[in-house]
Each structure stands twice: as C-alpha cells, then as structure tokens.
Amino acid sequence: MRLGLSLGYLTSTGSPVEHLALTQEADRLGYAVVWVAESYGSDSPSVLAWLAGQTSRIDVGAAVMQIPARTPAATAMTAATIDTLSGGRFRLGLGVSGPQVSEGWHGVRFGQPLARTREYVEIVRRAVARERVEYAGEHYPLPLPDGPGKALRLNFRPPRSRIPIYLAAVGPRNLELAGEIADGWLAVFYSPEAAADQLAAVTVGRSRVGAELAGFDVVPTVPVVVGDDVSACADLVRGYAALYIGGMGSRSRNFYHQLATRMGFGAAADVVQDHYLAGRVRDAAAAVPLEFIDRTSLLGPPTRIAERIGDFAAAGVTTLSVSLFGDDVEEKKATLRTVAQALDTAGVGQ
Image (cartoon, rainbow, N blue to C red; front, top):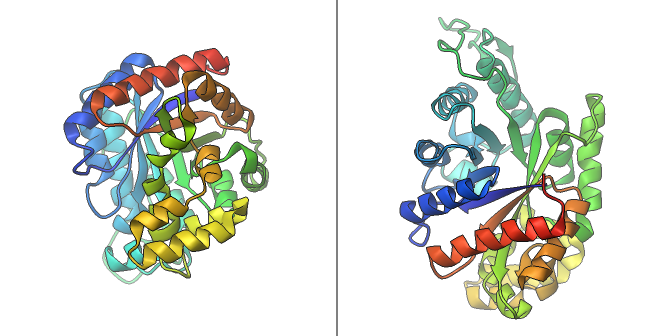
C-alpha cells in the first residue's frame, strides 16, 4: 500500500502556502500522490500545476475535475498539459458532482450520469492518445454532425499516451463503471468493515473487460487525527462528516447519506440530515456516530493508527490518501510523518 495526501479545496483555512508546505513535506517523505479537489470555488488543475512546478517526485492528482465543468476535449488538453509540465506525474480523477452543483453552478443537466461518464472517458482517452477524435455519442457527438467542424488530433505530444484515470464513485452502478473503464477508484467514507460489497461491485466491472481487481488502484480519502483520546480526535472530524451526510445534496438525493445508510447507519444519517438542512449544523455534527467516524478515519495514538492502516490494506486499499485535521501546518506535517512511520510499523508499505 502507498500513501497519498488529500488537500481538498483552497479555503480560508487551507491556504496556498499551507498546501505547498504539506505537499513538499509529503514529497520528501515519499508519498506517492497529492490530490486536490474542486467544487464551486478553486479549481483543481490550476493548483496542481502550481504544486507540480515546486515538487520533484510526487504525483499530482485531480480529485476531481468535474465532468459538467468542461468538455471532454478541454479536460484532455488540461491533462496532457499538466502531464507534460510535471514530467509524467499527473493523475486524472473525474466525477459528475451532484445535481445541485451540476445544474445550479454549471448549467448542465444531471440526467444519465453513467452514460455521460462513459462517453467522456472514452473521448479523453482518445484525445490524450493523439487519435483523431471522432465520436458518435449521444451526449458528446464529435464533430457536430450538422456543422463545419472537423475531426481533430491533439497538436502536441505529451510524455504519455495514456494518463491514469480515476472515477469518484459512491453508488454500486458507478462502482461497476469505475471497475470497467477506469484505472482506479476515488473513495470517500471507506470502511474496512463495509468494503466487501463496494469491492464486489468494482470486481463486476473489471470482469466485463476481462480484468481482475489486482492492478486497480483503490484510493480512499481518510481523515487522520493523532492523539491519546479517540473520542476527542473524532470530534475534529464531525463537521466534515456532517457536511457530507447532511448537506451535500437535497433530502431526496444525497449520495453520501445513501452510502451511510448502506453501511448500516441509516437512522443516524436521517438525524444528521434533519439537523443540517434545518440549519442546526452543530447538532448535525454531534449526531454523527463515533463508530462511523472511527471506522472511516485513522484516530488515536500512533500504535492504533498503525493497526488500523493494516486493516485498510487488508480491505483492499492500495493508496491510502490522508486528509489532515490540525491547528496549524506544523501539526499537520507531524501527522504526515506519523502516518509514514505507522505504515512502516504496519508492514504493508510498498
């Protein structure tokens, strides 16, 4: 198992200076990849290009570039460009986001997300490989059949003809699609105790193309808090968990609420959502079960974290990407070092 660093978005508490300092520390420690997210604020490729120019070994990964935000060709151009500038260190994570962001921010209908994703990935792969892009898709016909457009080929040669593509997937059908068309899966709220069904769905997708799970990168983002009191560590993660379970989507369509329900926390997820949608954010955070946070995070002293890292490796994780919770950048750097040492203690590193 390898280690990754999940930085999330640029926010008032996640400044560019901090992002760079943590990435350079992860690079020094031998972490495999740093991931940057986007929603409706900072975009991921700009940050990744900036980080790539100030690091030497660590891969830079989009987690994710939103499918409704860009045409497939625009994404292929960006991926090929960053891969060139970084010397072949780019990883392309893709996701459809959700209805509220897709339709409210980008003005793109959310319907048929799986079919759109399949077409999108196929076009990106062709473009990066410098094939002439002709595609008779329902969602992305190229060139448009009734105009003067012509089939074009990427007009420069990136260092790789195939850039690793990851899908951010939550539901069973999307997990099957990830196994079928992608090189890896970007997971959230991954629990070793509940991973079997998710990996089974990925395996179904792999079997459709005659492949096995081996060689497929399973990449969960896992919150980490180091400390003696597990419950106190979990308290730092509560707001993050409540935001996703309670606030990422509407009452009828929240993929993370549905995931928590499939994991056996349905009743608690309903309470979290009720509080969050009513504006009672603190109550929502308090209602997230300690057991849910503990199963999906690395909490406690280094020995406990090492033991838990072993559990994640045994449950199919190939790249463990840590999300850091702490008061300042020095504390977060110390957490990066603790996790690297815990990986060695667990004896599951590559």
